[in-house]
Length: 603
Image (tube, rainbow, N blue to C red):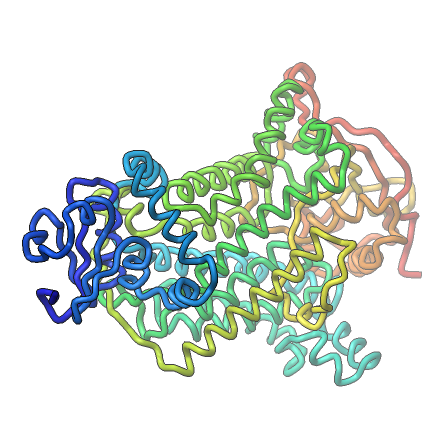
């Protein structure tokens, strides 16, 4: 018996919808290595094969006339090396494989419906050309936001005349730990500890962000962005210690390997993305979402009894006016919302690894959660970065179904075979990153299990753990800072974004992050300046009238000269109800709690 061509021929049942769907998928996978034909057309050419054999399973006819069927035929046609090895050498594997194949073959209508539900009707090979293109530009936009947001406040935070000068910080590091500081505190700022260099890093980050958005030399632009932002995060100390800062660094680091190695990334020459790093991005998104849900339910009774949203909207760092309205909703709605949040963070993330339709459904669920968070709170670029990561859950076939032909770009795929050393490098990097992130994630979930120490990765902030609002704050302490020249008349320093004036509506500020306002929220939770080391530096800057620090505030009540004395008092803030708001025009009410920082002066 001889095959009709010089290539293997896979013969299938053309009347079976399930067979037609998967044959179309396999044709994309095998390319021109295998021929395909329905038995209704070619059965007469192979009289030695009973018609019943064609009807019951696929038949693979090799060039030498050998005929294979069932699971063996599928594995040989798709050239699944590791599975073929198991099929021929692992005891019992062949029997199990054939049993599964027979089960599917005998219930093809059911599995056909299941296929349509999970994968849809698209038979294109799964590619992510458009998703990668959108993702890289979205990541460039996030970097741009991060650098611009930091640039306008960097000198007041860590400049030479700021609250925590970066130069003094590095000098102290060098004095205490010597040359080891170059590794434990990785930053380009070691090269030039000046305000001009802070300016250069922010400006350079803006330029490289625009280069990435334009699609020029993406891997090299991403290397620069990662190095510049890591340098700023490192010297930013407490002001750049947020989870979205390290999330941006981790996503940016993975993107270096994910981006196409081209001078200019265009649709006219789009190469297939790295499958390994695509899965690492999905693994990052899974860890981010699942850990955020896990730490809540594992750490706090308020989350477990579903009452957390009774407090969340008014006690979060920087609420929006929409959050004020959300706070007024009945408790049953808050409990239902909490259940929905747990579903989005603990159940939906598993759909990240599911087939196309379920994965797309999971993407919609994650996007919906981020949109709701954006409406009710200011979390900088965190939610936008999470939305950008969600783009990698959508393949090109799904984009084609969602976009009209007018908006769907024409993608010209270019088959590129990367050099062997690059393939090996990508495989080693992906494996190492998966193991390191898996160890850190496992340590977060199973704290009693002894896992290898990977603390050596911590300085580079590119393999991280996540989990927002593990402990729900049930009250909102606010620090009110005041100055005086006679210790009798006190004037209040108004912040740009954090609550202070009772009649001022909560504002939208995201994706910009006013980092001093954010740290004031954390400082208030500490109860006293003694537990907040940077706070006295801030008060000292007010006494000295440092313009870089005063620019971080909404207004300076002492425009002519700085006050002789400053103090900080602590109030308990809470949202007003609709009746009070209508009658008094106030969004907040407050109750005096005590002294946060006693009266101090430069003397």
